[in-house]
Length: 222
Figure (cartoon, rainbow, N blue to C red):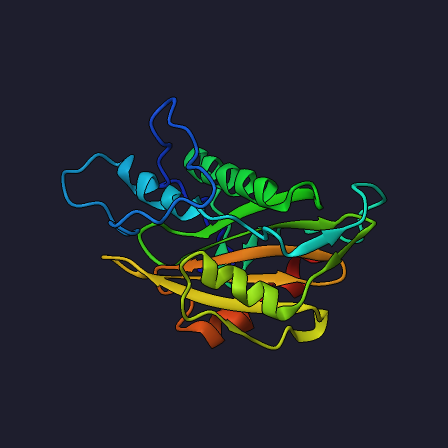
């Protein structure tokens, strides 16, 4: 109904207490991500989702002469992105924290003020975005490096796409699981770098994911 505020998404269940974040470079779980089978513990929804965090994010894609200087840009996450509301429950925050941790590990201090957010529902289409501003003495590497990084981490069909009004380099690739296909897009430009993961049908293919990543960049990059 028009004018009715949509309640926050609350069905992202926290992972078991004490469960460590997956190590950088670990593969996606074979079960993929999707609705937990009837009768399964609700916490398995996030357990499947957290496997998507296990990637090395923007690793080696940003060059630096020194880890110093004012950041060139930043990201600010809105309450809704690409038509999907931001998930704000405890489980969603925990999942976003894990994405942010992986981004920090992959960026090796070349990105600052890294943020991460999850949008949508674990029972349907959803996406996650994470990234930050390049350090003052950092610069982006080539489009070929962005594409090769995705291919090296299991996205065999990785391809470069036009980077849109923000410029820089953009590549997207997909990985299949038993439940769904996950698409990851990585961008690096003169101000920011980051990743968007699409799952549950949030993007229909690589070209669609690339176009939506450029839209997400326009909405979040400052």
